[in-house]
Image (spheres, rainbow, N blue to C red):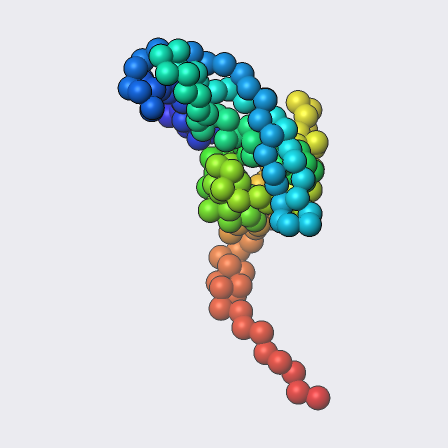
Length: 181
């Protein structure tokens, strides 16, 4: 069974102009500037985005791809990984969002929101994700793989040496009793 580790959905071409209904759209690149931040700390960010131009009515508009690029510009400004980079890190470990959440300790919903660009990760989560990206090499399959191996060993109910059945029974009924001084 093949699992999809990217969780990406393909983008579709708009069938007609939203203003006039004609299907004479061409994709162009435009440079957009937009404000980011609150009053007093607002900055003007700039990014080149794809846009659709209608040759019938001269209407121009952007779509989800442009929104992703604006979000990446915000991430670069804040020094954070972008949603695409977070997806790439997780995909490099060949994990689903659920598996990645279990192995890293992040919430599955948080990972989904970060990868969709709905929320920004905090600095500590960003640093941990960067460490996971940097530690991933062909020789070292990952710190996560090492952690998984240790967890699997801990989850095992088998002892490393052969013990008599009485020892297993004694271990199963063992009760810690507090001593009195």
